[in-house]
Length: 223
Image 1 (cartoon, rainbow, N blue to C red):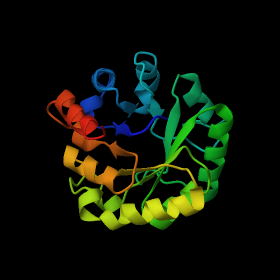
Image 2 (cartoon, rainbow, N blue to C red):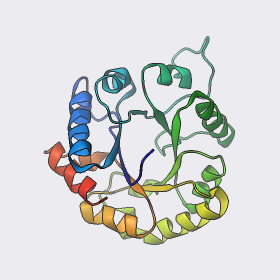
Image 3 (tube, rainbow, N blue to C red):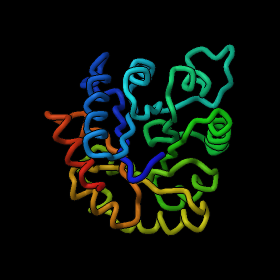
């Protein structure tokens, strides 16, 4: 993973239903190439192969189940995520939380498969615990701010500062990304100033009237 990075989590908003997910990914790819900024897209699971096969920027799954391939109806093992062309996975988002032992298993198995991992955590101490598992990066996201437009970098800057401090002590060189309420370029610049190496953004981009303009605004702030 290259830093600084913008991770676009599309979730399952109606705005990216079907091939619209690919359309958004194509816009992100164009901005990435134009600015030379690292951008990762995480489309709905149903569109993961479509997006991964049609853009050159990294495509991440929005989650995975702690199971091996086999008689697992309705589950998504890491092996299937890798097979469709994804290069990584977001784990433990506040909307899809995991038990610690399952999270540890997934991070370890992803490493063995050559998949990168972004592990989400709600606070500094949870972020430090996540960093101890050795993921590619940790994303701190206070759940009460997600989707509110109240950026953690403005509302709770101390959370970012403390997370960076604790992760450095526990996880060594594990980078910290921040999310929750990120809406503008100013939010992004502030997050970088506080010590993070990127942002995880969902609704501010996916639900924007002009995808290109919003992605450009946030990506430029990373430069």
